[in-house]
Length: 436
Image (tube, rainbow, N blue to C red; front, side, top):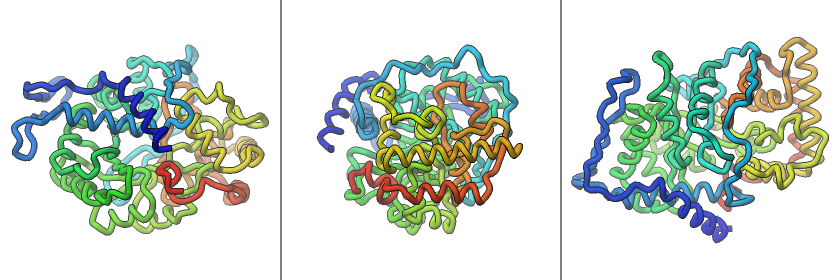
């Protein structure tokens, strides 16, 4: 598997050379943008830890390898980028009145995020062609619907740049909460404070923010035991004002405890959590997070549409339907969960509950996806669910998840079916790391 991932990474690196900055002796300096007083662009100087000049070629090489390795690790069905399902809106947009999306504080911090978060892995590639202008319109439309928090990552191709373009062009008075990730895949033994600071500064530049409200830390190889050291470097940057709050993403419980015990002020942890993937629950992570003021942000809650009416009463996704990185990943999650008959039992149970929610007057249009999201939102420690944004077609659907509550009896019905699952086994991201 490692050879397979490495091969894909090599191919991706060849196709991502456009993102590698050429070596230049010119000092890089971004001045404050006077057209926007709410989010000025910070200066990024070409000096780190006493060196007069950063080697941009080496730093960009690290960024490119990191991006390629992450994408290769995620894309399990194919290394190709599908050209279908463009990231544009349908001609007819919903005019249904939107449900108010509540906000929540992460951990014990003062950082308020919406309980549904816009996710932009979809801008990394592997999800079809898209137009940057339409992607920016998608961000504003979701913000207008109350989904005011945006999630991206340093390894999602041009995603941070596009979010930054939105931040620069957004209407006056609009104040999205931008969250990104600090992902470490390669050269793990060489990372030092100077590199960490430079990467965070570059992220601020791309995102057009003075400081990053929430940085979410990922470490790929536990055998190189420097994740606590690097997390503490991020903590120092928080104290210096470059970072608002620190979160983690896809760590297991053992490593979360190590970072917390070392004094890393974690306020959140982004994990895959759905009715098809209960690893944060079965590992005891949800209980520990509740006891230690760490809020969970859940992605994959509808499994790229597997947990919806589309797959009720029919077979699993076909090869033709596995045309995005998301669908390939979540199809494997469904396979690990159990037989397709068990997935169908989950869907039938949720469909029945959705009917009861509609007939009881709690939500006139509740569907399977809403039940799937609501079940996760009501799980201990969960602050928000993250939705992958590709268009504006599902805004009303995603907001109405907040229009109703499930009864305890309804939650028990779902839990009874989930108890029959065979997997995924282990703790968060164990399988993806090759540890289970």
